[in-house]
Length: 308
Ligand code: SF4
Ligand code: SF4
Image (cartoon, rainbow, N blue to C red):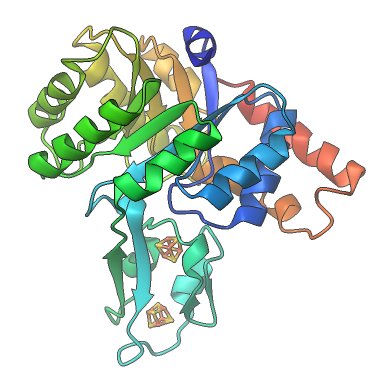
């Protein structure tokens, strides 16, 4: 059961809520499974869940699908306005997903991290929030067999959050995860929203994914992971019957910093940094068939998984 690995300290690989590149997801899941990871967070699309299952080959591991409410960055996709774009290429250079090539956005790879808009001095990048109807999206995924549903609730639209949360609770009987951060919510608001969301749930059936700065990982230093630890501490201080998972700027320093700060976390979810660490291997077309390359990459991934 998923709760078994959460009762130890587990590593969750975040393939990206917005990452709809099935070939990449298959490679990432195969690689991080070989490195010891047993919990995988993927986009809520049938073809992506299929890709993860293909990589797992029936071996025991847990799949979480991520859905978001409108406005949450995890469900944003970048768009370039060519009336304003001067083709400088800065967005291309900064994109951690390789989602921009020759000033064009490959939407299936975009995770909505926001880096491209930050570097664009022409204001040419905007974001479209991908709205999904959970009533259409979730039933086929539940049918396929998933272990957890995560709702990205980084928005102060309480009505939408609670409406989507109520529906997820109605149709899915397993572990749920609330991915939340302080960016758009005050500390008090974040905690009161969590309390409201877990009020009707059985103890220890909910993960609170404390998202420091969403999708900010990439650098392997203490500063980058500080907000994930600080957000987890806020949740821990409430003594709620939930599992606490750190995310948002997580890297190989997260576990050490969390332990120094006396955070009794149940897991660490790593996305951007975990993907960056193995990027040069994953990009190879022979990655899944070249045993030498795969094993070398697994060694690199293992060095991160075992830091948790
Ligand atoms: S950074 Fe802005 S101006 Fe430069 S290529 Fe990207 S969208 Fe165009
Ligand atoms: S930088 Fe981030 S938001 Fe921009 S295209 Fe790349 S993944 Fe998408």
